[in-house]
Length: 207
Image (cartoon, rainbow, N blue to C red; front, side, top):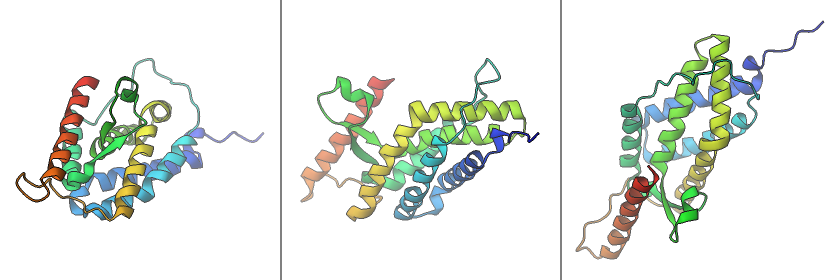
């Protein structure tokens, strides 16, 4: 009798692991890469990650308690702050696929750096658990990653990809800081400051 293949080592899981590893590697090394080049890397990686995440097997958790977490708050902050500084004014974008839209009469301002840091956190935790080589831990890592993809970071990935597409093909310069008031572009600076302020307010409301 032919033995059924182990879903933990199926092609879709192995390819997802490889793509998640590439994403985390480039995200951790973002300081070595020019802003536009980093966006082009994400442009190619994110669709593949989305596809492979959608093909992860549907498993049942083995352990009753939640999986161990490895990405600390300071790790998330480091990734977020580095990306935000690298993107500059290109970090903020208007978002329509956001739960906060239900309670808001104005467009929600989202952060590309925040989205990427959130995706990184889930994928990095998944990779560390999967690479333990313990079947039960690997099983629960795949189960949780699929669940989080469906309910959380899958939408963030798609939102980010739309913003990245616009940035790459609009020709907008990456890494610019808002100009100071008093210049001929004072109105542009004011609008940029308002977007940043709204973003902070929305974050406070979302806590």
